[in-house]
Length: 124
Image (cartoon, helix red, strand yellow):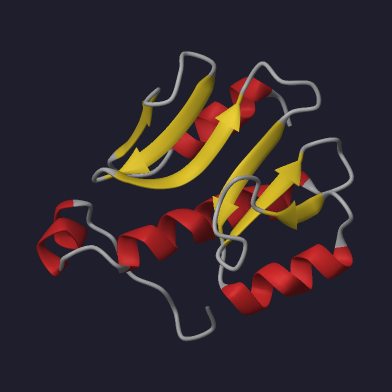
């Protein structure tokens, strides 16, 4: 996954915005002011930090060496993924969507409706 593809994936959700609250190098992707992804898009290797269900976070870390506890983030709820090709792009895209959904699920119903968010299924 390239930086351009990562940015497009993060911005592909309703209400998603890219901001630079820390510095000009670190992209912070938010929905209604809440962070769901962070990446330094010019880093080599490219990495992205994503919110994750705690049980799934542990499972993913045990399966993929490129997925580690969130760098400078609450380790229980965040993973950092090195985008070196060892984690399938499809899984990375699913993780981005899951991160977005976890954040939106905590928003007020009114905000969810503005985003036309369908909600998390029982499987998630």
